[in-house]
Length: 571
Image (cartoon, rainbow, N blue to C red; front, top):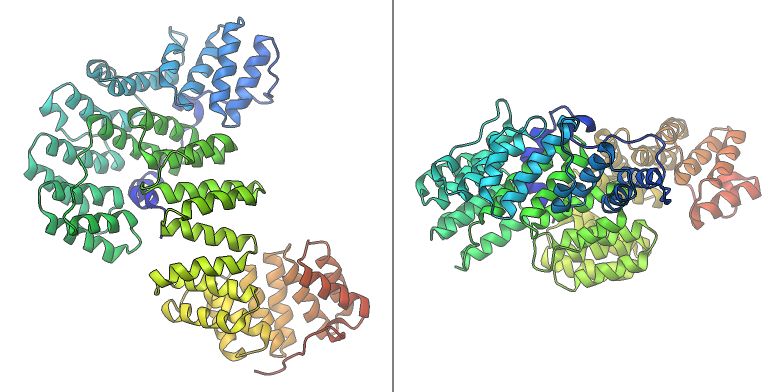
């Protein structure tokens, strides 16, 4: 179970990650104005500042409105028009952007380049192939060369120039254009009924390691449309052997095996939208979120039903602090879409993180009612996050019945059983999960620490947490488990050493500080122990840890106090 878009775009995210980010002024986006604050007064300058502040906060639709008002109030100057143009593109209103396009010799070259790309995309979206071709043929420089190159074949196809549409786009040294240009070429060969050449192009993409769901599905669907369902199933089986969690591939295999109709080939507009996903993901990899949002808005101008683009728009807006805009984007994928469960999960968690668990739960329950397993897993995770572990167990039990070998589900249910104080069931689930996945450090640490804290199977538990720490030596929680193992086994000197390391790694963790206080007490460092327990009370501990620290401080007997658990000296 995973987010299918990440698998679909993984190859070009990795390719683009090596590129150097471009500053905003070079990509056609207005640089921030230091100190701009939202003061939407009647003055044009106040409206301008409000628009800039909204743009800086990721609220591009509001920004566009402020800039429009500033222009109408008398601030009709180049700076306002450039920012209004940028804001309209970022908001996805390309028609409005073009109406605000800065013109004249004084307009910046970066904005002119973005305007040419915007006109080309709008031409493709409205079927004005001649306009789109003319803009692209004129040449659009950095940083839009890749986007323009990938769009050119689709503009040629829309104009009826078949031969030009079949030429693979080239940008010297650009691996993204090379890879995804071949995908576009394969699709356009199929459109031209040159099926042998289409298959050769698809095979060049899918031979070898798993290329990502988007590429793999494009090839498989081509085979299905050619009536070669057995070949499509074989392709899907090979992919699933490498990536068992590839949800889209699994569903495509079921469709092909059942002899159902293959998806139709993309339209010219849809193909052009697909082509722009590559540079959008590349900009995300470079942390150029505003330019990525520009490309994603263009994708959706061409194909408003491109659900994975809506998910990425939501992520960019959420990252910029525009939760309202992000949630609107997450509501776009509908039940039946591959992106639906992921979108609903993000929508639900956005409410959870905003401290509105009831709305989060409402969203998650509605999505889980669709029967989608990923949506049910999101519901289980939210239930666990809100300490509703009995309900989480019920949801997870249903999922485990369908996926008995999924160790992550067993691990999650084991945690819930442990929180419900049903240790026999928790232990059974955790051990079953460990049998399936014996090397996961989180699982090793959780079961190992549980045994250590209970004073059980200490030698085995010590080996488990040592293995976990070897994998994640910077994890304060795991180093704490190791220190607590030494403590339980009576080696207090080693316990102090490891627990001090754990506190350095996780200084604000109340339980680790509590453990260190106990270890200090055992080696005779009583003042330091008392200091640690007092510190615990400043770190917002849960009720159990708070009561433990308070009891040790009140009694003056430390971990030997009347409420202390029995110490286990040896395994």
